[in-house]
Length: 340
Image 1 (cartoon, rainbow, N blue to C red):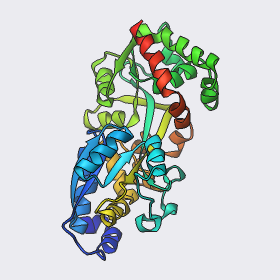
Image 2: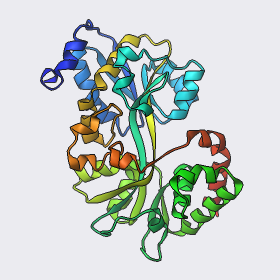
Image 3: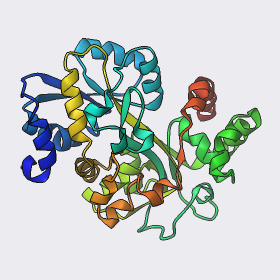
């Protein structure tokens, strides 16, 4: 089967001798594990005879170091902050880019010394088209007088403050400049406080889709992939507004000193194929960062892809430097707001 679908990949990986090593792949959270197993791990094992074990984690570099050593993790999905810190302190291997397909194979945001882009995490505005036919923006999200109904937001200060400023008329390119001042932070919290009585706070991405589908909220901020999956698997008619959505890449990183470095590189090479990454999107809503991946999608699927040019060009990249410097103190203020 793999030879028919990915003949070039099979021809290349076949030159590597088969081994019996178990490569441990660690996804970010359990939600994407099944799709990675089906779309990536099974074809990879079929082509190379390298068995794959899957695990998951929920973030935090200290947690990663402890669990990786205890469980023999080889390849992990990390966010931008974890990647930068882990690369600087030697937690991750420096990548041999020619061995995994070369830098030219990937979009620029996928490329770093220790990481190759795995997926794009995009937080967008979603709504039920059966109940609201227009296309809302963040100002509409806040305007419960004009558009009555509850709103869904992640119970996280990250994202909440950006969306509050966007609703208050701040241009996307000025959001982090505004948050860089005490007055700007006050402005964001005031705006968030205005909407607080109408907010249903969700904890996990699947919760966001559930409260939208149940009618508990009319609109919600949510990872776009969750909505793409709900539309496909549950035949929903949810819309996604990518304008002024927030995105950040997640990367694959290889743990330093692991026993399966060569096998990890093979995995990255094989799963870097645009056709495979398109299959991952169809299975889970997660889209990879190989160039040309959207060419493998239908027009309807491209409309739901955060890396499709029309959608990517109107989104705002999360400023991880801002959150690295300010998350602790702003989280305390956010918790105080919730408790009032």
